[in-house]
Image 1 (cartoon, rainbow, N blue to C red):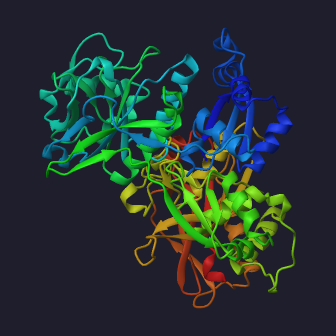
Image 2: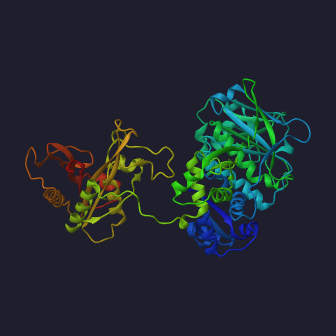
Length: 589
């Protein structure tokens, strides 16, 4: 869930009253949000970088509020306050209007056919006669960043550009050119750069380097010019410095370039609806005209209202309440969904505003009705159907094994299901292509790049973190690994495995071998060929040559045990020998 940080005093001023922390926490819960943390900028810096770095930082109290991922209208102070005020019935939900310019034609954005190779879509709008304060300006910039990280999928789907309209002149042209042909002064830089130079410059930028991959391998880069050839932006990387907005900006030109037109419309609607209240004529947005390569023209923002019809009985049955049609309509209106009872007295007509792109189906409306009613107010009822609960056989087996492995003197560890490629490949002397690993497409950190294919690396990292503990270290884990599997509808499957390690001054192969014998005894598998279990010598790069055995049970291979290779020991920053057991327990169900 996205987290929105707002200054407490600013929030209370906008809400028109002061709350205690407990009261505001309760209000958030009633509205379907969660007050995650009460902190300050100074506390955050002190916690992350130390007290020295925190000197001089602000002591202003911040509320960190968890917002549902699909509620883009709550990602800024303005939307949050508006939603809470409507919920508390302090104001009616505003009606957003698209208007034509007071004088002349709408601003025009012309898309050329060259953009089809990179980002083919664009939408635009104008916030006319807007008044910024420092707090409003900061909120405006922060909303862009929140949308970029959320619905825009780190600018891969949509990139937002905001410009001071008084510093540029239309019509604007959205085109794509070879990087060597694009030259401009980017935001907050002192000189001009070509697009190629910018890509090199921003490779070390902590913020922008994450977006370079979106276009750096493309033959042409997208760029927006005004009628005088001034560069407004090179989406999705950086805006031009010439058109940057300031506290003195009165007219804002907003453009969104995209690979997904639907998402671009949503993002534009969010940007303009959240801040049009600061325009001279509140809740109005000046339209802009977009001309497509085939000659079609469209006017944005759409600010489309749509209506849905559903019955009060549907909501009552799904939520588990018995409210009148009129009361349900009132509940929905509190959630910014204007609702009216239709002539038959049973159906409710619900108007979905452009700010509520999360409402897709009747069940979304039902959920809002439940929220407005109050989850704690829904009466507890006994389920109408009865079933006999039972533990999954795999989980039951896992739990029984855990208890007996602990009784055998081993300590259970619980490690991360995600790890780095290095952990499951290089450190174990394997090739990543042979591991059948599922890769995370946009990992937040190098530590979580793939889903683990073995429990061994996690246990060895745990040993490394506990090297100062008295020897020997006996650890085990029984958990799932994730393996690619083309026969599954999702392309991968979970596999429950048991892994144990013994770390001491001597390898302790006999200890691990004894543990395997105990596990087989618990599983009632006798030694021997055929239906029993046996081991035979095997070669595995993770284990020391000649000290590795493959385990067979009921006629098939279930895992390996042995003494780990010294290179594996060194790569996990260990200094003592270590033996390991790794088996699949699913065949024993």
